[in-house]
Amino acid sequence: MTTSNTQIAVIGAGPAGLMAAEVLAQGGVGVTVYDAMPSAGRKFLMAGRGGLNLTHSEALPVFLARYRAAMPKLAAAIEAFPPDRLRQWSEELGQPTFIGSSGRVFPRAFKASPLLRAWLRRLDSMGVQLKLRHRWTGWDEQGRLVFDSPDGQRATEVRATVLALGGASWPRLGSDGGWAETLGSKGVAISPLRPANCGFAVAWSGIFRDRFEGQPLKGIELTFGPHRARGEAIVTRTGIEGGAIYALSADLREAILSSGQATLHIALRPDLATNELVARLSAPKGKQSFSNWLRKAAHLSPVGIGLLQEAAVAPGASLSSLPAEKLAGLINAVPVRLNGVAPIARAISTAGGIAFDELDADFMIRRLPGVFAAGEMLDWEAPTGGYLLQASFATGAAAGRGALNWLNEATPSN
Image (cartoon, rainbow, N blue to C red; front, side, top):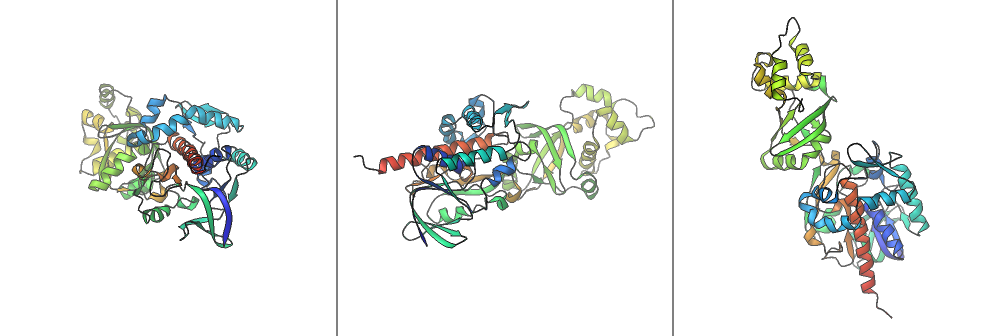
């Protein structure tokens, strides 16, 4: 079945796609947003479950540096739609924001659903059409977009397309990375999709795993090579995850993919000076059990003590026999050997995607004139903290502007 012309199709109803649609509608063109799922913004809603972290309040040069190698490619888009503009946009939708103690920015409602509902109402009032349960499968021989829909296969002719299909994390929410094969068959260079902001596998002993699965390690500092991160981590049955882990995940992932393992060091009392820690550990134990004495002397949690036991058992040492200096050194540099990366389906986000060299300055895919790409489909990654959503919104807006430019250039002037 062939549908009537739509000037621009946006494929993907996440933050990048919906932002592209808004920019396009403001430009006066007809827009239809297609999505394979039964409702829009499913991953966006998931991101807001624990409080929607829209962006970050730090100075823009510091903010941009969080994107590391991709920063030069993303800078113009983010500078055109920076964190302050995103906050203003949210407020215009009736969702004012606030800056948390960490510098992260959240809506006062602290969740995504009110913002998404207001956004969809605005898009509807602008004439944006939303077609759900439409899974894009590529192009037909006439260059029309092809969708699998509840009414069967549909072909749609458009003047331009914005692809905003996401990465491959949380595929049950709609982003399964299936587009990579479709674009790859057209000769578009795509960096392999890999988990980002993800957990890692650790071969815990059965005793440690059974006792401490799900327990948090709070107030820790992680070190991997020259990289450090403060925060929390969670012991899982198969390894370790959490905010502090995610901050180092890119470097840890690449090390594991290269050599099969990476050793992370965890400081359990990073704010306690070594000499003070040694003095505390030099105090007599009396009749206390070693674990109870260690808990009181160093203010360690049971899971922290268990982690120390894991580190001591591995080389066959006895934790209780270590002198105060060595015990203090171990407490603030517990080695944890990571031997695998958690599956991409469980990662918060995705690394890899369409190589930036495939795009022009307007986010158009050079090999596919009139086809633009935005969001997590592109080859960038960033830590949690608002950077993921900010770049998705900003690249969506940039792709929308690019598509408008394309239409204006393709339309002859009178």
